[in-house]
Image (cartoon, rainbow, N blue to C red; front, side):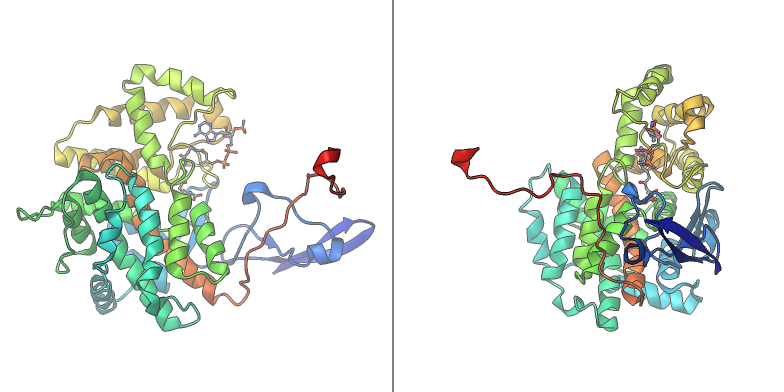
Length: 427
Ligand code: SDX
């Protein structure tokens, strides 16, 4: 704890404690500010606001560092697995082999969906965006798994957490199958989490599906890189929904809805569409000029970040992985050359330098996902699949936080002052 902060306001002085975390910026605890001064703080977009205490993920935006329970993301991406990172996010420590085997076994025993849920898909148009299907089906889970919706019961919270992590790949794969008119493929639990997902997505009942280890490893690494990221917009949405006592399935559905936005998780789909629209490197200057033009709403998708004012470490790992995966798969995608050229040009451009805009997690991921065989409409679904464990870990942390209460921000009111009603014949 550092010194207090004094505020002189309205002729009065009030003091507020400064709290320090393990690493990162101190916070000024202003919970008593309104009571003492009658004034609110004002921070649209929460650019300077810590909404909670958390021990799950830490980002140093200036240094381009991302830690999950203290472990650097590049080490986890290179040496760990998505199941192991999921255990780490949920439990706070890396598991022993036995703990990991038990956790993986538990998750694999929840991969099937209630059969009635399959009929939900048939209510959607075949060309429905898979994210629309994800929002609908995940929200509907609370209509099927009543025995894990009581958030005051730790056992029910644990089962709901396992169900969400286990079923989200099945739901995602079914959304893809439905969009291409192929039959759903049931989980096969002797496969790894990621291999199971790939088989449900790309396998067909008519023949055996052999998981390509190169693709499985790339997919698993992508899941690790998207698993959690502090209090981003969708995680804050999950926490806010959870703060009212809403059931976990409804909270995760709210997170999926928020992630869909192109400024957030929807950027991976938008970034590849943008790279394809640019087409060849000679057209890059035209798009850079548009991105800098205040009168043009166009932004370079996959660039910039609220927290990273240096390289997004995930983008670095994905940039390297894109070359490796395409080489191993023998794919020569000109979009990757355009992406590399765009990155080089943007990083030398004064506008991007001044505004500290670097490639983020969404800039290269689409190149790899496209090489694996996913259509762009599935990209944000994959982001949601991976982020579900982060949302679940953050939701559990929030529920167990003794300081947590229902989230209810205030406002700066700019509307009409008090006035009397005027009957319509007198207006
Ligand atoms: C994710 O928060 C997280 O952790 C999110 C995430 C996670 O893992 O959960 O990391 C995942 O959402 C990554 C971000 C994906 N989004 C995009 O790639 C979309 C393009 N990027 C932007 O829309 C933007 O950079 C944001 C939304 C990501 C961040 O916006 P901020 O922090 O609110 O910053 P801003 O919009 O105020 O921009 C600051 C300035 C502005 O110019 P000025 O008004 O100061 O003149 O930078 C400009 C912006 O116009 N700017 C860009 C730009 N991003 C910001 N200009 C051109 N192209 C861009 N991409």
